[in-house]
Length: 248
Image (cartoon, rainbow, N blue to C red; front, side, top):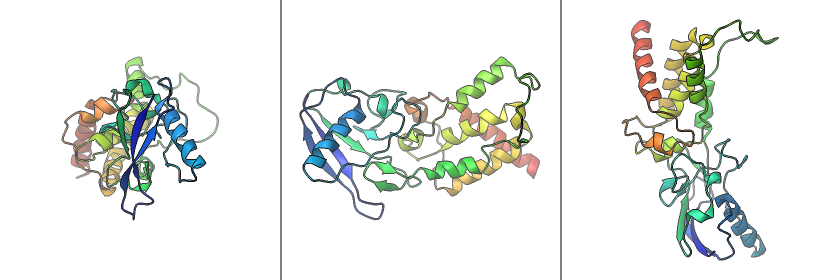
């Protein structure tokens, strides 16, 4: 299979980037997209050229590190998938495949396709936890949690923090990510005590990180690999309003 990769190359956030084209003709359609990039990098090494930097870790659609824009869409042509789950059979013989990093002020480019997503970490650090005593784990039935609540919390906690929601949003909003991280704790008994404080501090941190505001178009839900519902954003906004009213 022969394809042309048109890849964004940028040495650092302070440098001007550019697209560079690479023709590759030894690609199997059964390869994953990242394996195809590995193959391209091997050929660049043999030519004595600098390899293309891109993030990855588990390659199983779990860690969320691999995300890039492919032909103008987060993670490629399929909905609710990660880049590492994409295979070359999704492309045509001779196709030009445009690959670029996430585009958001809060995600500065480190090099090539790698961006700094530590802004997500700082949002989590501001309130994505519960206050609990350390030591022996409590007996499982000491705090009863209904199945509906447990299932909902698990659905929200499934967010892998890949940043596809931010990258695909026209405003670069982190509302879907932040709401999932707030709500999966706030609906559980263990998280109720600090629920108001959590929503206030995490949304404030989100704004300080230069993410845009949500206009509720729903693009984030379509591109989210874990299919996190935008109803989480509505719940976060409602809880935020209540927290501000009671605080005042």
